[in-house]
Image 1 (cartoon, one colour):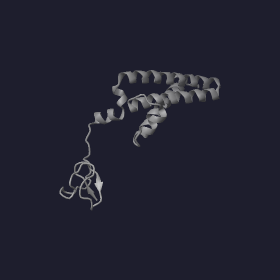
Image 2: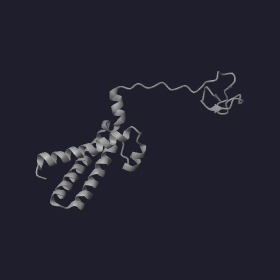
Image 3: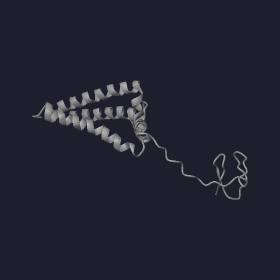
Image 4: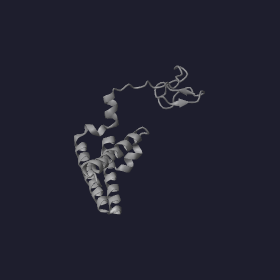
Length: 153
């Protein structure tokens, strides 16, 4: 398999010139596909590459507001749970979780995307970070309310 050195198009060995750019393949040295050099990024560049929304103040303002609304709904769900309204509390808690997940995807993607399309664009290494950031604050909030604010709950 020969590769055009100018446009990187692959051809069978019997082809003598590139159809796209006209370069003679036999005259040029055949190039194999080299491995691209690994890119070296600093820790700061890797962090902001993973969370580009942190660099956009408008997006962060909306995400913080939506996160506060999600935690207010979650708090309301815990009050409903304490009152014995279990199905209402579960529904409200689920809505709070989805609202917070939407705000989290805005921060991780760096733009306003619908939750479903943003989750499709995630890399494989983004999913564990997403789920850790999604469930850890709610777990901490629940434990603080249960053991510190309302110890008899």
